[in-house]
Image (cartoon, rainbow, N blue to C red; front, side, top):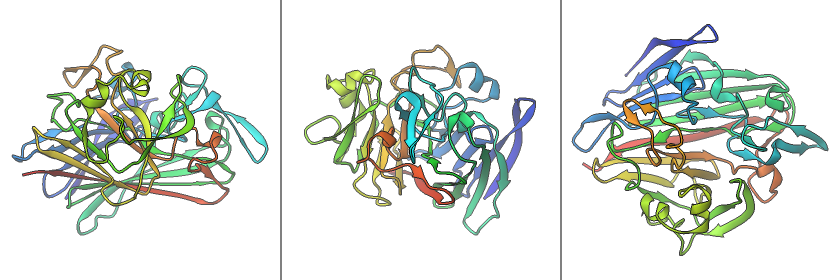
Length: 352
């Protein structure tokens, strides 16, 4: 197993470094210390052919130029939307950055996804290597209360697992809800879109959205709908449906699903032609499925492939969006000096 470090480019006259974590089976995770972005994941298909299975760019300039839709980034302080960018903690109202129309999205105009993180290469264990990214978010950044220390650790094992660990501690009550925004496409090197990927989610309920893609607060039973992924479903069956919630989200999914269980193979993504399979286990209460419904709005190339809708999909393990306005949702309030600790594991496999 090995970790390689190389210069990726410059941001604000500061060097941005690319780290390549490679295990003994050829699985390789590439990431940079700008936004903790995962730029590439090289994984074998059923024949052992190694190809890239995520959306990303080869230069820091491209991430800037194309206003990358959070390709591979860690988002925070708050993943998802907060209505009107406004919330109240202990009787005090806070206004955070409005970054999508009148609402707050993914941490604001900058957030964790557009800053340089410090880094430390972890001590190599027998079957695991890791890179740790650290960031200090000062009180008032993007409008959030509290001086917040956060860490994100990417660990690669010889069992073909990527484990992402999130850590946070604030000196004042605040909101914290982090996730990774990688777009997966298991076909390899973007040969096909994700419409025929089969997805399984152990979830009985999804959260209904309004016209601004904000949660209404209603929990909808998936039974009998295109939101029922409990026994596996091809993405195209939802995208091509006329379900009002699908049409609302630009003819696709952009919805939180409440997970029935944790660390029990609760999310499985499979692409039949390549044989690649991704198994996700997490301690988070929900996952947001986004099927890249707006990737075609800008014209650019993603490693020589034209951007288009449904070229990748996100499986964002997190607490529900806008939870601060819905008391029956899992809370994302982090109390003073308490520890935020979350973990999501991605197992890369094939059906050979």
